[in-house]
Amino acid sequence: MGAIAWASLLLGRTVPGWAGGGKAEPRPISFAKGKSSGTVSGTLSAGVQHEYSFGARKGQRATLTIESQPHGKYSAFRLLHRPTGYATRLDVNYTWSDTLPADGEYEVTVFLRPTEKVRTARYRLTLTLR
Image (tube, rainbow, N blue to C red; front, side, top):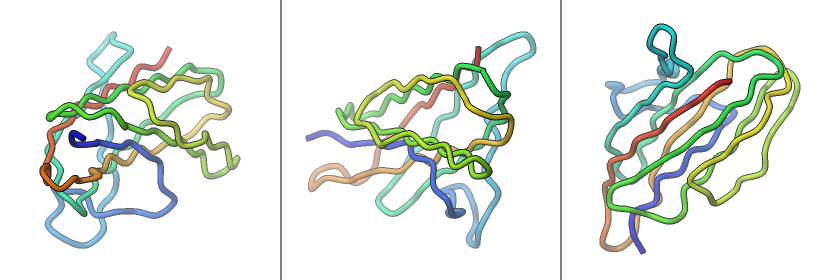
């Protein structure tokens, strides 16, 4: 089985791989002026997580897509909006899409599920808001 990059929204803060230690705020997913999507990427190793955030309005459609190298089959997304308790179930997909229930800040955590042969993986996560 190939490397598996998972995207999951977690309740607590995690230590991003680019942080020098301690807990850090999630890194915002940026959109170029006039664009409706933004992409972040990085390299993960076992036990390292990268946390991102984005603001959205009620009724917007969010789509998350993840690609990993080496290519893996089990990327997963779970979204949670803390104030409302909105959460998706954890699905094993490369793409997740839904209409967001509330205004506010959403977080996405990307992590690696290593295998015997693959201990690190690169990923590319794209968020589209419509």
